[in-house]
Image (cartoon, rainbow, N blue to C red; front, side, top):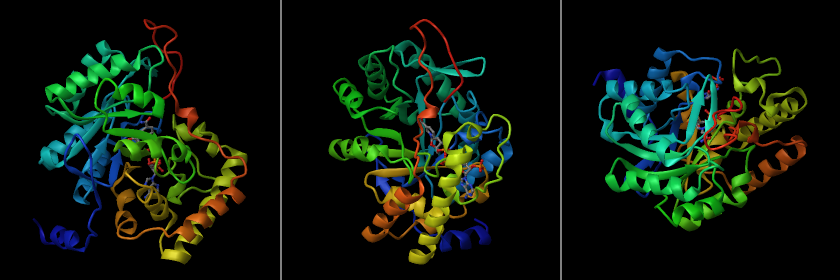
Length: 353
Ligand code: NAP
């Protein structure tokens, strides 16, 4: 190891960890999200930067990488596979990927049928260059396929050892109960950040009760909570923030005002940035791992600011008061939900992930 890298490792804060049932090993409490790395719906991406970002994440103590076939229609999984191979030590990385979204002509649609998952797992293993997946998640519930069918297929892959833990994403507690009657369930991946708190009244208490790990996605609310956004920030190409309702004029002003107030609060109380406050908030909420989407190595520079402290109750109450005052017209992440097929044998109807 070169001297500079060794010195940097000595200075780094210790990564917090959490055991994920099923996988049976501890994961870093920050996971790298790689949707933007796939380019699609994020205005494109740079492959070399993407690989460097994944390798930086691993260097910085992140051990969980979340991807999906739909992210760049296979590209994100390929880049994760390439970065992990270049880094070496596959066994030290937890790869979380997904199944249950198909795509056609640039449009995705839900298909969580057993027959599709049987093909998808082979494609994901090939793209990732691995013989097993650590966490395999159903990307979205499919209204045209019984939850029991999807669960039984993941159960078979689990029993064979092809996957080490089973997850669902965007599922309600009721859908998870149905799933658990057929196969074990270890992880739930849901939208969760300071501005998108719906899981606090359903999924989060359910996860506590059932011993599930929550992978909180959109930890920075698609970059809004990074503190980088300004009124005149523009998004290029197919970037989803062009249509994200939080980024549209009237609401965007409310959210930017809230980010500014949270940033002041974080500096006054802890000497931290709003980004650190946002990730710390997620980690303090229970059995959570924050999925932090990044596409350039420098975006991971603030990792240390997140570690080794906690939000106190008074600050949490102040956050709630500020948000209620400043975001008078809140909106959730529902715009991201992909369409169902019109019928079980039909393809896509719109463009979403
Ligand atoms: P996110 O983590 O809330 O935001 C990611 C974006 O924030 C980055 O692409 C980057 O955008 C910006 N950013 C990150 N670090 C920054 C920094 N230090 N300074 C300034 N900007 C910074 O959103 P996300 O990627 O949608 O969510 C995280 C992960 O969750 C995804 O990658 C994916 O793995 C998962 N996810 C899952 C689902 C699901 O249905 N299961 C849905 C959504 C996401 P720019 O570079 O463009 O500014």
